[in-house]
Image 1 (cartoon, protein in one colour):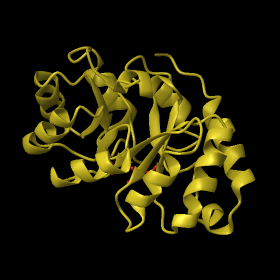
Image 2 (tube, rainbow, N blue to C red):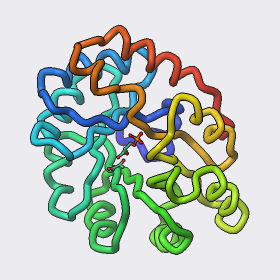
Image 3 (cartoon, protein in one colour):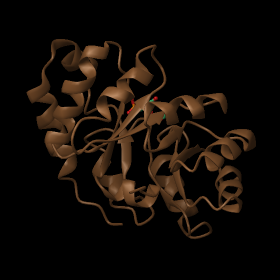
Length: 210
Ligand SMILES: O=C[C@H](O)COP(=O)(O)O
Ligand SMILES: CC(=O)C(=O)O
C-alpha cells in the first residue's frame, strides 16, 4: 500500500534525520529506532553509503524509510530504485518539484519563506518542512504563518532538540519535527543501540497537538 506524506508524518512525532557513514550501522540503527517507537527514518544523501543504507533499512520490519537531502532531479530515480518510501529536500525549485511529483513518491519539501510555502501550495503540496527551522524564525515563523497560510502543516527541522521539540509539537500547524538528536554520531560510532532506543523512546512519547 502506498502511503501519503500526511499518513507517514502521522506515524511518529519525530523523524530522525540520519547520516550513515558505515553501511554496517544501517540495520542496527534502524532496528534501534523502530524499537524505540520511531518508524519513520530519513536517510540523507550526504554520504556514499546512503543509497545502500536505504536499501538495507527498508528491509527492517516496521521501518518506513525515506531519502533526505534530495537536491537534484536525477536523484529521484536513484532513491526510487533504492526503495525510498518518501523524499525530503532541504529546499525546493520547480524542476525538482516536477521530478518528485512525477515519481509519485510522497514528498516533504523544505521551505524557508512564505513565498516558497505559497509556491508549493500552488503545486498542491500542503505538507512542508520548515528548514533550517530555528534559523528562519522557528516558533515565531510558524505562529506568524499559521493564520495566512493555515492550510499548511509543517515538519520543522534544523536546530530542533529534545528540549525544544515539545514547544514545536504544541503548535497547531506542526505535524511532526525532524532532527538528528536521536542519532548522535558518537553513539552510532560506539554501536550504542540500546542508548539510541532510549532516546527514540523519549522522542516517540512526545505529545503533539495536530
Ligand atoms: O541538516 C540538518 C538536519 O536536517 C537536521 O538538523 P539538526 O542536526 O539540527 O537536527
Ligand atoms: C535537511 C534535510 O532534512 C534534508 O537535507 O533533506
